[in-house]
Image 1 (cartoon, rainbow, N blue to C red):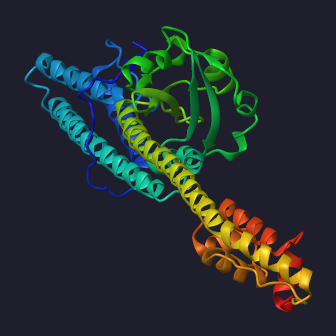
Image 2 (cartoon, helix red, strand yellow):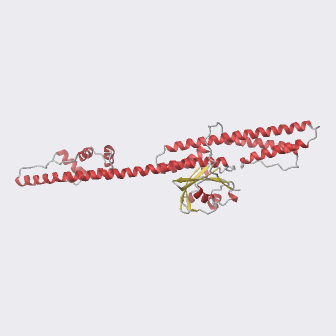
Image 3 (cartoon, one colour):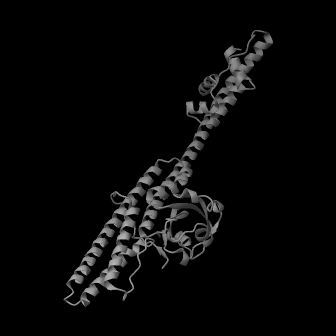
Length: 392
């Protein structure tokens, strides 16, 4: 089977961090298995075809070790009692294979724990990123650098298609040329494709071999040259809003169940972070809207309260002007908030700076400035400031 969907109970918990480079250790174990296979071949001869040892499919190593062990035991049963030296060699091979099986198990467990711990560290760093847009920009980078992959692509799901948005690749020389042509291009969601299945199941898919899987070949195989990959869904609420594709290209190693679990852990955690960021942005927008409405209402109330006083002053000024008893401009009556705004205007502060100082929106500042200019009868800020400073 070339595509494997993870079961609901296959979630892996993060284990303690293990030292060492898991890539180099895995290659070391594969080389050790190759040497043991050659030793078994020398003991058994060419009568039996031995399983191949390839690094691109490391999860088959346990099967290979088991097959070689059974071949050695079967050969021991056939040996006459006089061949003590050869029996000893076969026993040593069985012990060596069993020791390698234990080493491989310990390495696989430690590697999985380390990668899950690094995944948690990457998600913790993303928790401090401000804004949903910044989260999306950093997702692929954290998945590659923290979780042991070589490249990752983030895509957006729209209707019956998905659009690749961004790529992070360890191999900088191969980044950009093939991917740039696919940015924001709609990839159809074919019914039997692993991406289509995730829309309903919301579970990651592991594609063992793209040559035999119903994948979108123009992008994944022909352009991306991926032999094997994991794709995990990004969920917002109950809907799948995006995909994370990741693999080990250009290495020959194919993805395995550990890769699927790590990618799922990252995608699940990232989905929660993205949902929280979107919610915070909506709350901030609503807060600014409510603040704008509140201060706008305050401005209207101030304007109504001052309208009567202005009418009285206007009548007094008209009377004084007609009798010649007033030679100057009457004092301008500003509300307390308008006085605060005007005081900062005199210092040369911009509308945004005034808004930051008084903890109000820039729109509210503009409204106050408009009222101040109208009360002074000025055409601009400079004229109003000049009249106030000159006391005219």
